[in-house]
Length: 134
Image (cartoon, rainbow, N blue to C red):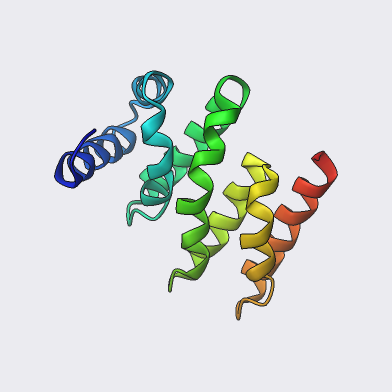
């Protein structure tokens, strides 16, 4: 088990790799160590747009081969539904919809009354996607 400092250092390294376009390397890291899945929320909340976009690409690449492990990312991503940044909240809802796991529904349902209309739309669409694919 890694200590908190090692985990934070590794996630920062992954985010830096993501920003520099090393998606294939990151995919391999996630395939070999499922512990990384719980940190997808940290990556999605990164201030760098390239890291956030890369996180979407990573999840989409892992959907077919690692779908069971992706459910471990739901609490970390769902925490971003309360982020002060409206873009981060909307991205979190959208990514939960892409993951499509029913465990995301309670978090999304709690966010249906977000103050921002675009977040509410993303939340509603994510709920619809999950319910229609269950």
